[in-house]
Image 1 (cartoon, rainbow, N blue to C red):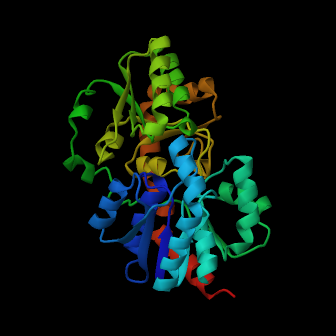
Image 2: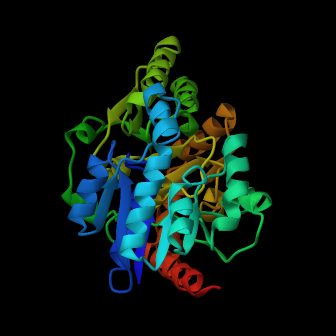
Length: 380
């Protein structure tokens, strides 16, 4: 089977990682070609090449608040659709996989114009009203759906005008790669600085949806109760988020929090996940966060806001702790519990790893994708 996986965002994030991991696992059954934008995709392209995944680069503009990019989106979208449709007609793919969420619809339209069946991958639980209305209008064109979580499926169900085959496939983690044992082979000089500290960390692109101001406020509250804490954020600051990043720095200064460390993007996050005593997710909205699954696979104790399907896997009191979204006091109390109770923390570390293996491993995700591909490509 030949599948074109189209994504209109080039910056590396959860959907891009998922695309590569699934394509790798399905090589014996599926020949995947990733179609991506030229802009901001150099890291994504490098990973495709390293994994021997075919890719094609187009000038695909995206919906954004950045003035220049937004203008290009308005003026160039029709030409981009024409180019994409012409390519899909020429290549005769068996199926088109539209990745990246409800706002990425160019692959859907191009697929319809080229006469190719499409599956729309929805991996969020929060979109502006105009995106939801546009999605609802275009939904009859899709031949099927993959939802990254049950919450995503519930969120989008009212906007789907014609029922089609649908599958819930959580974002995958490679539990062979993200394992506490192999991580001992990798070191990072930054990690060594925190030898005698309790480290509470997160991995996230710097973005308001990640609730990093909550992360900082929690740090401020915990600093009043404990000594030798270190709060770490691993993730890049893109040009579009520099203003938000500056506000986070200002918040640290205002609250006199000097032990929050932004370490930037890292090619290998495993040494950090291994060193974290507690992984803290403060997101306002998620669907199936790969960063949380990777932390679980590394055997890290999890405290997370109740977003996406996290509570389905991080079962409260059994696998980790779930707090109310945006509630700094509730989040702090959950973290305090784990700082004070080493036995519980170690129990959660063990259970997190088990759940990652049995419910979130890449093999399960690849099988789910293959089932969706075969079902939708054969549907009438």
